[in-house]
Length: 187
Image (cartoon, rainbow, N blue to C red; front, side, top):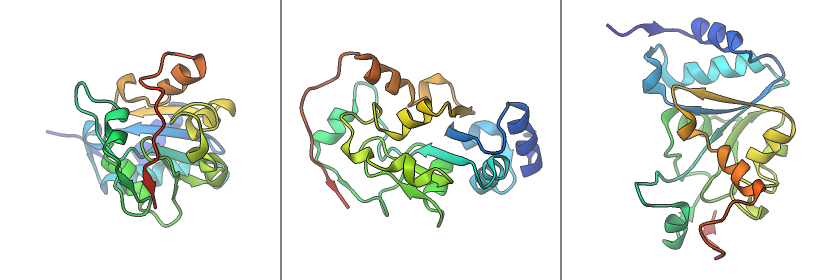
């Protein structure tokens, strides 16, 4: 039988992990891996926001595509997708998509590795993401969270889901998949 998890339990667990009021956190998640959460993704988001409080910020990756084995974001961008920040869904989990749809959320204008954010640093985090040299490197929300010593939370996922690892690659000068520049339509 699957354990029932409520908001109070999630709040306690988040605090036990070291998340606290005023924190900025990027959350990589899988709701189904957590068990049965009463209230679903909204309960998880409400718990995160309650723990970080009004001065805190919760960000989630909002990638509009899931890459299949052998595919990359370059393959996605070559298809010239239309990326509408209001309508293009996040394909990296129900928690990310539910947060994106919240009235207080804003989404960055980066077409392959966008981020949705709620909280005090929301506007600063997403500002200029579309002008960054790479999707996760300098100037991106992923990079900014690292710069301010924000936190990375893996909720029901492994490091394989940690998009921020690409920040280390980009800033560290790892070889890129292409030197080609793409100009997808962003609405």
